[in-house]
Length: 312
Image 1: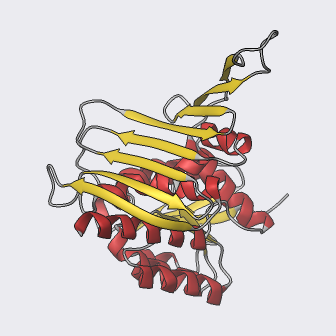
Image 2: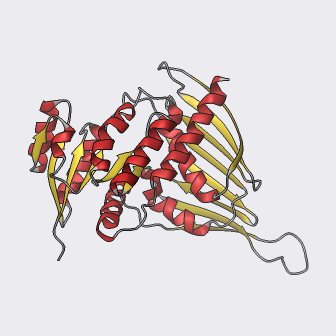
Image 3: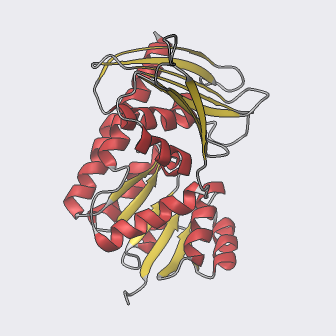
């Protein structure tokens, strides 16, 4: 029997508080404490989860083996570096940092401290996305829509960094090639940042991805379609199910081949539970996280290029 992994959470707003609740119910895990700049918030979450409350994340240093950092992106480097340099394994929420230079500094801190660094690109742990990745070999065209109503969270960043970066990360993982060119359009609607955006990513192997993100729509749509040589797979991120369309053998006597439709049933589960379980599995067993620091850096690099194309 392994000793319990001592964990903490820095930043217990909406998402960080969910991290804390999941850790609190995990076997072989001891939630040592939560920290937040709002002491009342930290105390409330700590009371709910049965752990200590701290006003400063640094107070967790020396007390934990692993930590979730769920603070505003502009504070990622400042908060993450002391933990990583001390060898504390980290799940750092996406995006990895506000700038490429800060992202590199986060990765370097993890390397210096020998700490595992996982970036919280949550959609990679969507059961449907994981099943889709197993089915896709050589995608030729990818189309993604991530559209939702306006909410008050994450309005300190644009829709590319807030939402589209999820799909950029998924696309990069599915294609596995370098990007040759990026074009994009977008506009602010409610906030002072871009609230709706469309980007076209062209890869060196000829694959093309078209991705749209909006946080000002009246409907909620989260869907990806991946076209390959003999058909396509369509995933609804919300119900985590896949619709597959494939061509069958040529019909007897000639003519067009039969088109076959299949519903791929995927056992859904909360992606955040899967993400935190996998993070702690890597902490226990070693190895490379599904979304490591370099993957987070590449997703940020492309997101920044999309923003630059929108601004040009």
